[in-house]
Image (cartoon, rainbow, N blue to C red):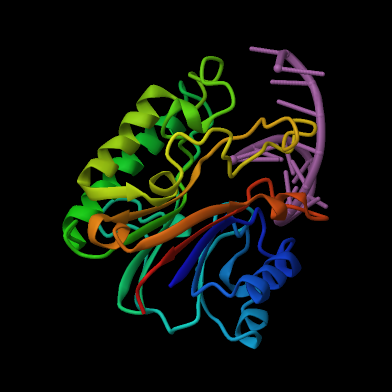
Length: 259
DNA sequence: ATGGTTGCGCTGCAA
């Protein structure tokens, strides 16, 4: 099973890039974030035409998530079910080919002194509680998406300078670590331990960021142990960031030896 | 690089 995640930064602006990538790479599951479109305007037909099911939940202008899959997704649920703000445009879960998949667009947080940053920290705590409620670390489970956190110093281009950035803040890293402790393995790091300058996001505002290696590894594919043991490889498709009208993120891919 | 770019949807906001 081949799975991938991509923050598209508008599914409508990135439609051709995405469809071409899918036809070339033929993933079984592809999770999207920042689709930036309300459900009534989501371009579902093009995905169906190339042989994929697509489920999505979005809103006007910001956020929005979707999952494309070869097999029909089962048990599709949007948002949190803990009685708080469901935040449906940031969280989709489903069971695909018998494996539960959770796709998240974790809130960015804007700045460390902002209420939005507190919301981000709470959001990650709520997500751990959701994993505790619905899943077991002893069973196969995939968590993938834009986590908006670079876990370790090796995952950013300048860890000293970026320590107060919301995507590399000690509190954000600790909040993500709390979720990881529940029972996840970062399958990219599993296959590329200590490999530096492996990024999935480069800010549009930084000129020649890709060439200058000014990036962040904030998109992730994490699996529970029994599934991680079956992971045969993981990689970042840097070429897709060199496309004509690229997203500011790129595709992260992983393969598993399961049917 | 306390600058810069992109997308949405119409004016400035989010990232």
